[in-house]
Image 1 (cartoon, rainbow, N blue to C red):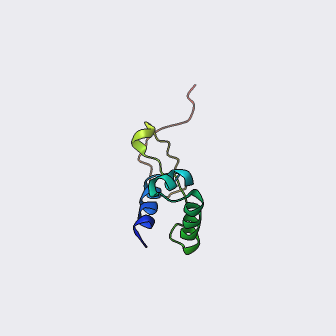
Image 2 (cartoon, rainbow, N blue to C red):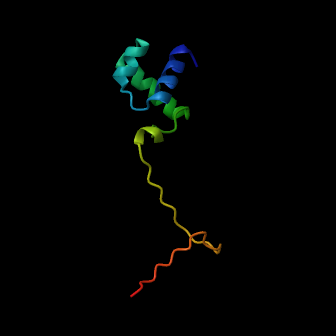
Image 3 (cartoon, rainbow, N blue to C red):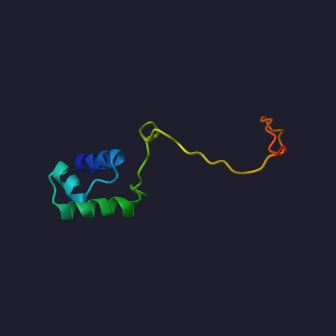
Amino acid sequence: MNEIDLIFIIKLFYNSHLTYRELAEVTGMSVSATHKQIRKFVDDGIISAFIARSIVMRLRFLWIMISGSSNAKSVFSFNFKRRY
């Protein structure tokens, strides 16, 4: 792995949605050569997926859904029966 390969990896780590053109501009390589290098990383298993990671603080809210069952006694004492 050379210095340009390391630049690719670092740039893609921080922003996996960079275009080949943007990566080419950073490294001074052609778009075609950049595409071939990224494809080689994928084929060699160096890159296994291109994902977007969310930053919870920037979302300003977070929905959490928990499902399942438990035999534990509930810590809540809500009575959902209707009272007439």
